[in-house]
Image (tube, rainbow, N blue to C red; front, side):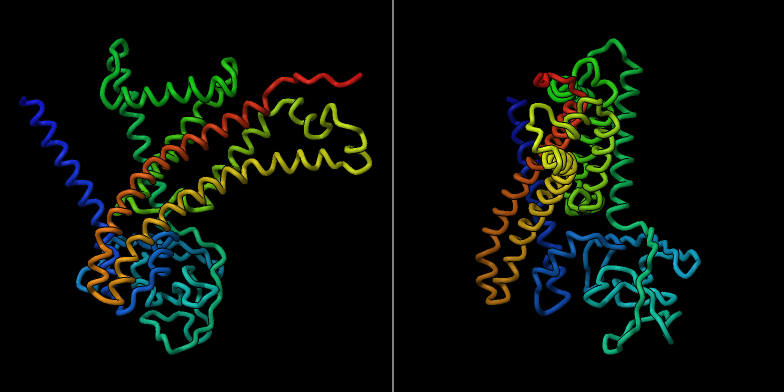
Length: 378
């Protein structure tokens, strides 16, 4: 009886927490709508998807509350460092540097030219400034900061689990340690060994684990609307491109001679498809190059699409509210329900995309190391 009451109280607390978490993005949208009379859904969505030089938290009393991040530039032969708060949410310049405000430079740091080369202060929207791009920008942006946070979290998790194993080597794992071990064993027994082989998987197993937990953690952090979540790391095509390129180089460097022979001189293929026009080798080579491209686009597109749909549902409240307040009030419950549904769906997608990326990586590695099983015709 007492245990049942505890479960009921716990369930109510979880439901209340989920509802509060769901209402946080509504507050963010409301803050955005307070800043201007007209709500622009497209600008709001893009602001929360693309990278930025500061970590915006919320807006309180028409004042933006954000975490400034280091701006590191190498321009005109010198290193320039300052905090992103100097830009004052993109409305000011500092020592001649500013956030681009033209269509071509929007969201990027630019250098003011001419009489404003060393200008520090608020930018005049009615003036036209001569701009030049900053070619070497190594600033700590929002996504870079989120990457560092996720790396620290992963290191803490696995160091904690490893310490527990060292302390109790003969004791069965339990709790969080048991959950991590269950995931590791699943990746080993259901992905690495079947696709790569029991004799060869050990060399690639650490990379597969790193891929899975890195993608999963950043997917989950992207669903949290407050700091340290909210950064769209796996929805940044640069991040997914690097992950895909690392997989491509591992596959290429680990491939045996049979893999390359199959690409250069496919067996059991008519000679006229290989000479004088190397049609089949060209198709096989394009297929090998397409594999990392598919990995990159799949993860990027799925995570970006989910964020756009969720933010779109929240934006409907203020789009209808701009027509009439009653319409905004009536649409709010429907938008909130769709938001919760899409949030649950995105939670599932976060696990699925981490699993698929790891699965396909193991599949490509296994195919590159597979021994020849097709005999050439005599």
